[in-house]
Length: 106
Image (cartoon, rainbow, N blue to C red; front, side, top):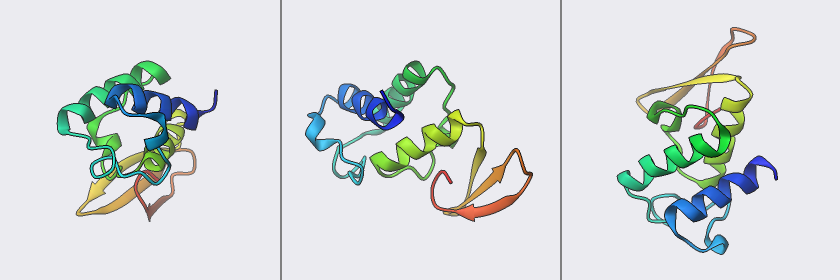
């Protein structure tokens, strides 16, 4: 199963929503009604599913299901550290040492 399918499965189960609602462009807060407690439980479920530690900082700026998938892929591949500076996301690419600004999670 690919990363996207696994993330969607975790989201559906953790948020107790129908699979048909977990679309790439679905907004976590608005469309899936995620609360701060749900967000915490989702992070724990994603950590368990992917066998990695995910901090709140890693999840900053994540607004859609596609953002969640992208963050997991980037973290799994060890390509970035995400820092949020007043809404601007800075991504430090560990392998090249380059710094660039971009959308949430790279």
